[in-house]
Image (cartoon, rainbow, N blue to C red; front, side, top):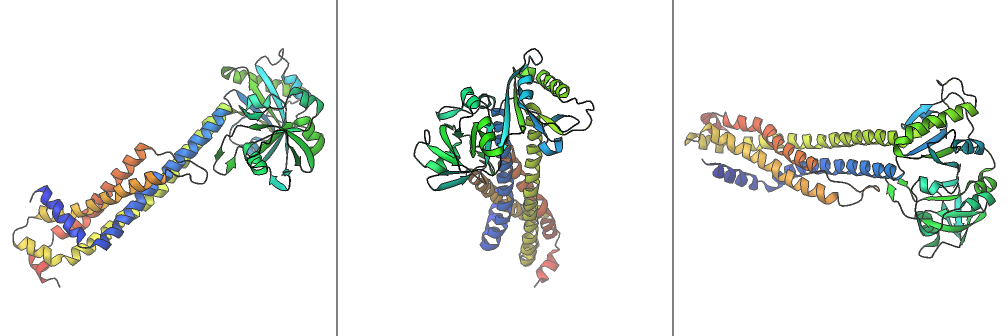
Length: 408
């Protein structure tokens, strides 16, 4: 019997039980499709996070009050005592004699639970930031319309604000927000600009924010006190380590820090943060792929089950074929071909399902299909057909003709 004849008989055998074959194919389809889709979601999430961190620049440090556990995995240095970040600290860090590798310093104060209201429409802000004019360049936030806040605005504590695109769209719809007045927790601020949309990553919307002069925010929303963060831009990416060392030295000196073993503030290095987040995202992608691979394994077990049922139902047919001279290999090859056909058809449809599903945004993440995941999922599905089909095929091939013919 030629290979073509084996495939033809296998196809006819599967066609004889269309519903059963279809359900088995469905199991493999779900497994292969899940692997491709979930790996694509993991890749998309990884790329979105990397893009956002890179957009902040790799020459940026963030000094935050609180220990490393409070600020996440990008922490590279910790210090010993509770600090209060003041405006004098920011001015000291901009002294070119002591910090020649620091380009700009943006003190940041975050106001919590701020609602923006315009003509009866209210929106709860994801983030309300009080800072200075250099923050926009440091964070690579571009202005889509209007202008950014200026040094004069900060100096005069003017109640002006730049809105993220989500806030502007929610409050003003299709109208221009620039020149309008919004109430931030009941305090009127004039909108002077709207940021270029940056998009969301998963459940985080980078455009759901408002930025105002820190002096106005302290005066109207938070009260006067220390800053929660300093965003520091180094003169160049390769000067980041030097800028970090200078920052630590100045803060230690100004706050009389003597024991550098206990931390209540952290210095976040964007380059380290990018590396850490990339490793985390890669682990997340592998985990998603592993979970999806379990469904592929379940599909393989389904193939074994269905093929065993098929062998039992066709025992007399096998006996007749053996009685008229069918060799061991022909019986083995036919059932292996049937199992492999099931897995390959399911794999091909699963690839189609995974690729088409990856064209849609899932939970705010644009999936990115990896060719290697497609080839791996399809290849594994074919191997699963061979592996899980080998047991029922061997069982059929080893049947003795007389016993098979006696089977009821």
